[in-house]
Length: 120
Image (cartoon, rainbow, N blue to C red; front, top):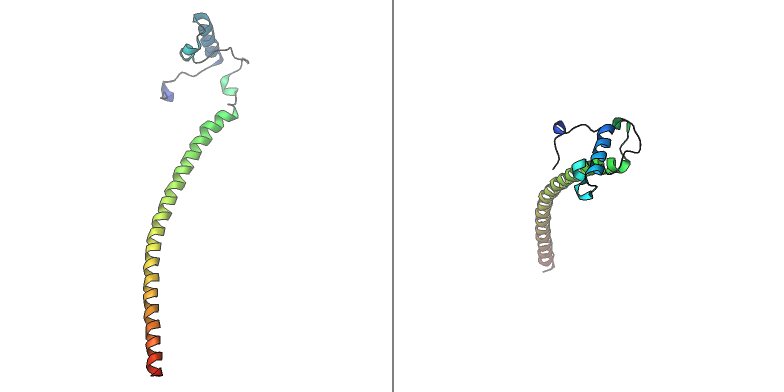
């Protein structure tokens, strides 16, 4: 469960260092690393976090996954609509083909009767 952004504290290099110091001072137990914001190691670079570009995999997994899910949902909805329209169309087409077949049979029967009556 994620915490709404209004309730979270903005992370800085200083908070990362403080969390890491507390983690190393208290116990270094990886199972409890969550209490220290998972700061198992000191930051490699002492720079402001808003100057750091997130790794591409993180961006892809977050944004692209959400976009892909929305795209799948949208195409599924479109597929449903197309299928419903095709069902109606194919039902109407089936009725028309049956009617055409019945009329064609009637025409063939009439032609046979005419040819038989002329031949007699």
